[in-house]
Image 1: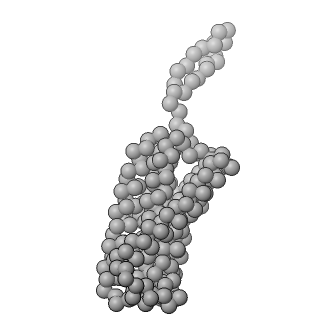
Image 2 (image 1 turned 120 degrees about the vertical axis):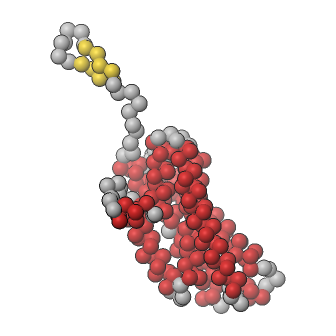
Length: 221
């Protein structure tokens, strides 16, 4: 900071701070936190991708179709990801233009973080539908999303966690996304998106690989 004595005043100074750190207001924070939470709730629709076919008794018909399981698998994952990302993009645009939330200047980096989070959520939902029988996967996802939302800062910032809470907070996908978005928006550092994008993509690839193996072992979907 620089200080300057005002003329005629010996005991008063004017202070000017250089490079003051920009911080989010409550509306800005919750616009970001709610958007990442909506993105992660894509795991609910992901869990219903194949399970829905079984419930509607269309899984056998799909298996008998002249289409490989890999094509069905890829089509469902891509379609579900695109549809959910469009919903997230709508939330992003609404918060920006209606509520005037601050999303910074690096929109491409922000949207890439959200897109990979949606992909991860769809992959988690699809993986859980294979790892757990019947409604078990849905129950696990409901519990996990609530815990991940709480630890990821969807309801209020969780910055002073310690010990076990800090470890649990740091493995929440919403924590990765919120931390990256905060650095992108308020630190003007688009490179901060790379760790979150990498973690989201790697975790999504792991869940998709597990799901593909389990699907291949089954006779039907």
